[in-house]
Length: 441
Image (cartoon, rainbow, N blue to C red; front, side, top):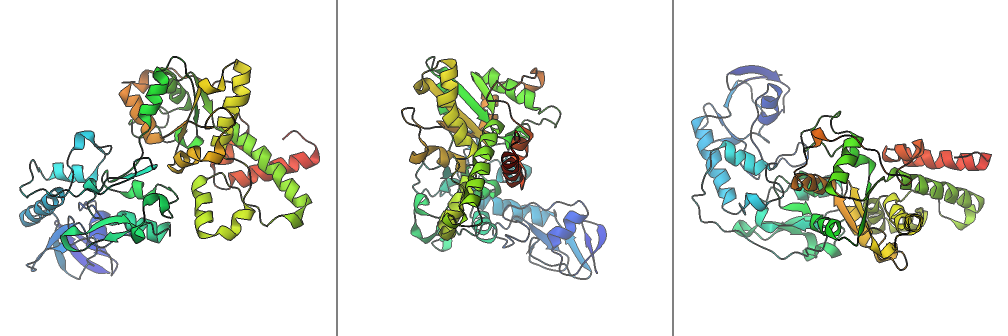
């Protein structure tokens, strides 16, 4: 064990522990931008600098191991002065228009700048801009990139897709799509992990809220919205609601208050997918020599994209069933439209989904139903849904709970476990067994 002192607190930590981890263990937070434990420990931002007694130069806490007898100051006058200068240098190459940034109030750089009392940038501002296809579901704004390399590392080390890479050298160093490709020609599966781990607004999903507001304002349009299971557990987080306040009923009420005509649960379509996959499994078992084994479920468009790009030999193993999102869209513009006597062309089907890949899935040409355009017209993420709530100035705490509309808002237990790891397979096998036994699945 190593003995050291951090900001007057004496402690013991295992050999090899970083100064940052040691400080965190006693409740001392060292500010940082680029650090991701075991993934990105390259001290690119130089914000985590700390002072060590007896050393003239500051060290970076994220990748400097502790030493016996070390005395560390994480917020000394020298540290604050250098840290402030380092952040000012980052801001000199950053688009600081926070009022128009999607990450405002939820930005690590903004928070650290405020904590350091930075009110102006003393250095000449040079904000580089590179072209980007803004029709793509993932948007990269080079003006907000701080070259922390988080996106590069998370894509390489965790997702293994190698979409991002460092471009140029010296002061012109930046991050861009690897191999000089455009993003639509890359292997990007739209998993969204780079967006999640970006500390600024350099990476975000394409904003489609304006399309939703336009549909809501069109008196000829009947707006039908479906909500994925994962959204129910996440929508209240950014609004500061606890688990009891962020209930399913209040979420439905918020959507009704925004102006959606019909609010449905994607679990209904999950049941349809399960029935399709269960019967497809039975078909494959009955004609095993015609098919590749094992059979994989394919409801996640990001996963399907991953398989097609990295393991195309397994494409024959995928189920042919559409995802619940697309099945719901098809049902909304056929069965539901017929039941309600609505022209399918007047239905605007909107999905609220937890992943960016659903935006691309909805736009694929082979997902379009005959005569009614896309099965799903607009896909919003949970973040976009929350922004719509804020735009409408809805205080969710005062909403009275409402139920999903019927019949496309009803589902079975199989539909519920669809959103749980292994739940799709369990539901499909259970349904296949019920079909074989002649029971009502």
